[in-house]
Structures are given as structure tokens and as C-alpha cells.
Image 1 (tube, rainbow, N blue to C red):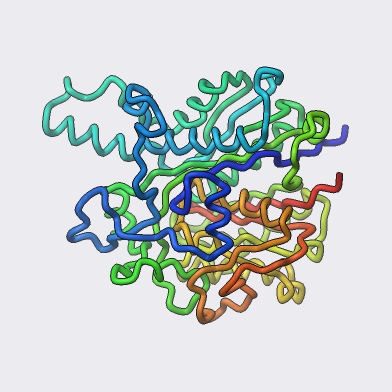
Image 2 (tube, rainbow, N blue to C red):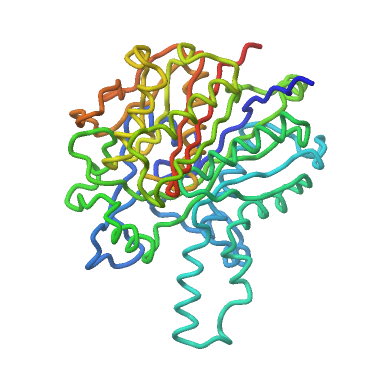
Length: 414
């Protein structure tokens, strides 16, 4: 039996560049900066004092007060991105079989802000003052559950958690669910709200974060020789994946086709990527093969591109291993250069940007890429957005624990 084809018919997001995917996309094309000082708490004595935050975000402007109090930021961001996605897809839920609509999201950490705040309550006021909403507010699956409840979607809903590859795995599982007839539509993507005192302190202790505190707008610089670590970001992105015939029947706008999914493990180290690049190389090859395409069919890669020393080297090496001489013709850019690293949500916003790049034949630049670092010898689209006719594109995600995911998207042929 042939696998059903899967297309992307809706894009939604909330990021440090905007509270919609459209605002985020336009800012990405312009090479805008979404990184600035953290303002929610005092960062005195922190190694890193900046992040890609949703500045001025007020929960009660988007949710009724009783609802906002019960939802962690990570869940709020996911719901807002899903609302944006639903509106963009122009899907009438009342005329769609909700038993055939699933929700599959990724998150690396989940409700860490809730965990921290309720732990403070426990220490200061005792166990009887801990909120009864603590567990449903902090559990990672609250994000997918909330979307399912809000929209009344009755097919499976769950969350994948594989660090920075979480949303990549979620999109891969959503692809498989539709291909094999388990659902006709899936709201899929990822969310993260890890700009919290403990998380910033912890990633700082690992020396994973940039410490360019005097110039945060210059801190996220993937593949650049002066990169010194990643920049934490927050937000969410949700894509609507839809069985192709279902989408065509309702006259949906189709951004791209999700054609292939590859997933591997380094089996090496809990935080460091294996420097030979074999794991991501195999994931990229698997995605291309799964989509029944060849390396030379690809024109663009939205890179994981974290701005860390080893990740950028390893990803570049993996691309070289897969594409050989064709690598010199590829355009490669990093969304993280403008919004920071959304951890478990990063693969989602990057997949959404990839889909928009395909339909518009336009690629956003890699901000702050001024001089290539040693071993980083690809075309990382420095400076300005670029017009490129794209038939096929990849979106890569690599996560702590050795997780490697690659997704192959293609221009829809209808």
C-alpha cells in the first residue's frame, strides 16, 4: 500500500520577533534582531544576561485571568501559535471530523517557570501552599493537551521530548501518522519557555551560552569565527500537516510538502556531538531517501546552526559528507541567528521558515555572520535575504543526548 502524501497548510508562531508567524517571517527576511537583555528578574552575577524573549508579553492580554493562572508560559505560547496556525490554515473545525485531527508537539523542558515558582512557594510558605494546579501546569504534555481541549480534537495528542530535536521528532511522528492513516490532519510543532533564572544559570554553568553581554544583538552568530555559544530563546511554532487529498478537496493553500524524515543517534555523549558528523549525516541521508529524492535535488538547508563551536563544525561536516561538491551550490542559513535557540521548539519555527522559503523562493539571511569560522566553509547566506528557486529543502535539528533529525520539504506540485 502506498503512503499517503502530506502537505503543510498552516503556519503559526510566537517568537521574540513577533506574536504571529507573519510578523516573525517578515522580521527574519529583514535580518532583524530579537535578542536583548533579560528584564523579568535581576541578572546580577549571571554569566549571561540576555536572551530572545517575548518582550512586553502579558498573559492576560491573550487569556482570561483564571485561564492564564493555570497555564505555564510554554503552554500559553503553544496555544497562541496553534491559534495563529488555525487562522492561517482557514480550517473550519465545525465541518471537519475532529476524531481525525491529532496534536503532536515537542518540548525539551516544559513548565520550568512553574517548577521554579512553586518550589519557591514550598520553601517560603510550606507544602500546604503549593498550588493544586502545579502538576497540570508544569507537565510537558500540557501543551498538546491544551490545544486538543481548546479545539476539541479527539485523535491522539502527545509530546515528544528529545532536547533540541524535540519538535523535529514531533513533526516526524505527525508525518507518519498521516502517511499511515492514523489521522488526516495534525497540529504539530514545538514550544519552549526556558528563559528562567534556573535554566539560564544552568546553561551558563555548562558554558553553553554566549557571554557577549555588552552587545547581545551581536551574540548569536552561527558559523562565524567569533561565535562563543548559543543564545537562549523562547516561543513556539505550530504547523498544520494535512493529507494531500484532504487539503485539495477543501481548497487549502499549500505551503510545501513534507516528504521525508530521518532520525539517528550519535550514541556518544550526553551533551557533545560526535565530531565525525556521522549521526547527522545519516539523518540527512535518511530524510532524503525517505522522500525518494537524491542529494542533488536539494537547494536549501535551514541549519540547526546554534552558534556553538562544535555544533557548527559537526553540522557543516555532515553536510559536506552528504552532498560532496553539490554542497558548494547549497544555501544554508540559521533562524537562531535572530531569535536565539528555542530548544525543544526550535525545529518547529525552523521548519515553518523552510516552508515559507519554498513557496516564496526567498531565504532569510544568517545574521551576524561576518567571517566564517575554521571548518565552516559553506554559503551561510550572510547579509541580506536571497531569492532562490527551491524545489527541495532540508531542516536539521541536533539535540543534547545525541539526537539527530532531518526533515525534507518539497515544493508542492499541484
